[in-house]
Length: 219
Image 1 (cartoon, rainbow, N blue to C red):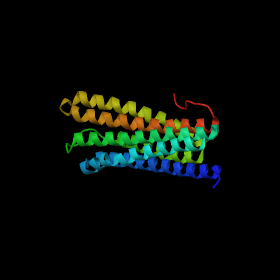
Image 2: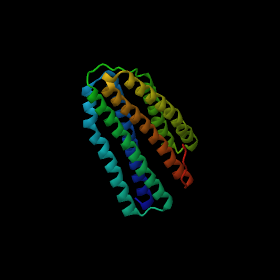
Image 3: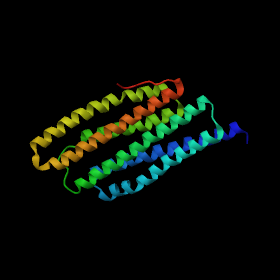
Image 4: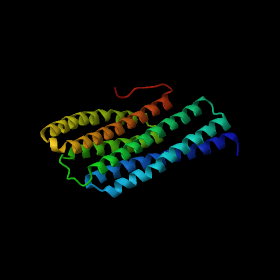
């Protein structure tokens, strides 16, 4: 196999690894939030246990790319593609971390009945998952038009985050006995908002890959 063919084959393998870490992290986020709603402590504990798989996937991607750079000395455009994959994999690993954090908040709440309506949190989770799934598709297809549209959805999540935090703070003031649980739900809200930010990050990585310069898509 000639050098270029070998590089293309290894690049395809790394891209497949990226899809794997993306799907694993998004799935973990969905399961973690569902476990919160159902107060399923066993499912939450499994999210914690399975996080090692996501961490290992990121390490494998990094190691694979380091070897490709060392052995094949890619040209500038190829190097940019590899660096973007490293950054995007890191973003998805962070989403997996937020799934773990949500699982931990669920465990801390335990079986105490939820005292705050979860509708806003559910909407945030749905929109965040939609953004993440869509940006992975746009990233794979190098579709910057779709990526920009996805990044713009972050404003919606940010607005909902602000409104929900206000409601949580009010609920805490009105129900001091439940302040601990409300604090845990406040953290869940934050983790969902931060996960959506990583979709925007990946959109920006894609713009750098395609355009060769950095763009800030959501300020």
